[in-house]
Length: 608
Image 1 (cartoon, rainbow, N blue to C red):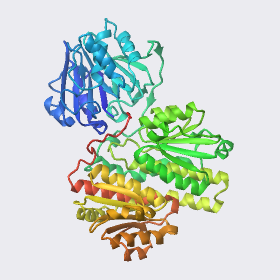
Image 2: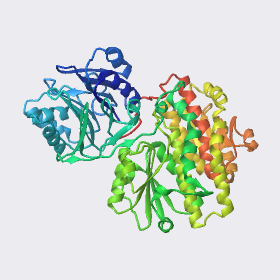
Image 3: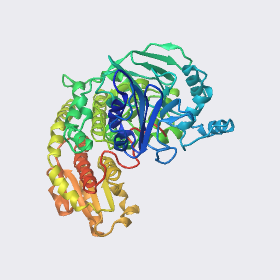
Image 4: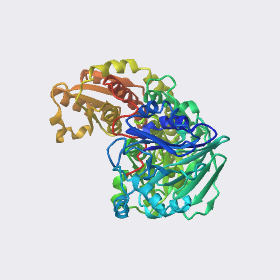
């Protein structure tokens, strides 16, 4: 989850590195540091706290002159946040510096062997083992030392490495943690993600597992772990550079919520052609699609919640059985996959560690994997048998909004494609679905216009200690994501429950004044949800309901009602989630929380 940036070239490195780290602070913000070669030695400055502490300490990089360097913003795993545990880490004499994203699983036995050989460790991190191992193996050939170290370590890593006696070179390597290499006319870059260097170059190279990059101001080469020369093709990034900036909004999260209409449009428009759904990226013939007997959706966090919605939509439309699995459980449960099974993995970053592992495990068993991914060139995008991109653009806020909305519509498109092929929807029904799908961006725009109304309501509940979200069917899937949004950015305890489960224990938690958010967009379940609202009201709850326009009877049961425009029953999640996102946002703002960087969280979970 940590963020890495490196630069070597004609300009001063420190300001470029600080600027890049600012774009990656969503990946970690416990501490930050830089190592810059100043012409004589590697100068290291690092500090606990947000990146601003390091910026102030170095006066925006002015106190660290030099044209090559590496930087890091940390999300603590091994060792508490501190100046000592912050990266970069150096060997005892300061001649080697390393920044690292990932986890070295066998660092303890390696550390014990190094201690036995007289090495002293200052930090609690696994990363310090890497730099001390490099010191142990270094005999004047950096590539030889790096290769020996990487053959010894187990786990995941993305590395930026500098040697004081190789002042014109930065070395980079990766295994199961993202790292890209960029190049422009004035130099070369490394970064954990595209937004860090988008301001400087759009030409990037994606390192594959166990590859090493050698960066110089005027040269860039790639090697295997066995030091064999590799030829790699560059990728041109077509993201708008302004997409990684706040653009006048108070927070990236608010900006990204307002980008959802465009995100949904960009995701669905290329796949609608001549009144039909055309998904060329599937790389499956109609016969192969018709042969699908069961689907396994595997994901984490909000992507998992999108998958829960996908289950209801695919089963309802296409009548294909769907299982939804948390990726970490899927990979360790020895899942039973059979003939005709398709595995769908969903990830915004395309680097989510457990999801990526589930993909690889499924492929080892001989099953096809479809990735639904936002980041072009990411590990899942490259390794999946087919990839359906969501085209949300860079998402900077830790709490996802627009990427989640894009994942939903990607699943709708797939469901409609399968349903039409299988004949489970008529031609007229398909046309109506297509019309409702196309209407979603404008309807989302309309709901975003209700922000003032939602903000006023949120201000009444800034002191809430517990909030419960309830719903049935797709409404429960909506509740899962609404609850997560609230808890992860406002730190208010929040839980989501299938409304039918209330009497099986949950209702005992309801007391006078408890806020219950009831989602009721499925007309066939409307009256049952009304009954659940009445139940919690009888125990003293205050109920905010989210329902379709025209469902006026709910006003007699709920205390406060938010209406969404009419749409197909399968698409209501795309609309009902908007007021829930806004509600969570304004609760967090009102409580003084750091909305874009919630405590203890990072954007891309690239370690288990």
